[in-house]
Amino acid sequence: MGKYTKEEVIGVVFSKLRPSPEDVFADIGCGSGAVAEFFAPYVKKVYAVDLKISEDVKKRLERLENVVVAEMDGREFLKNTNLIWSSSVERGVLRRCSTSAVPEGLL
Image (tube, rainbow, N blue to C red):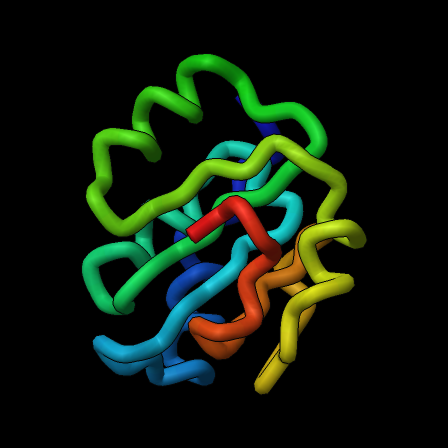
């Protein structure tokens, strides 16, 4: 399992972002998938992106209808992403992006 983001940190980020049901999030450096999993019920789509994602995390996230798991370099993912807002979440980065800004092949 990847690095775990504390629930308190996720709660603070959530309260600052105030996501809407039309938002699309990319959890870059998703690690354990905790941030992606937490945000999934509140947004339109979540991209969980990391260089290597464990099979347990993949299985847990892929059962959520609006989560796309992308095992790739976050920089590659972000090259074609129009960012609206970004914030550090411990060592990873949580990003909100427009739906038209997702790299080809991930929609």
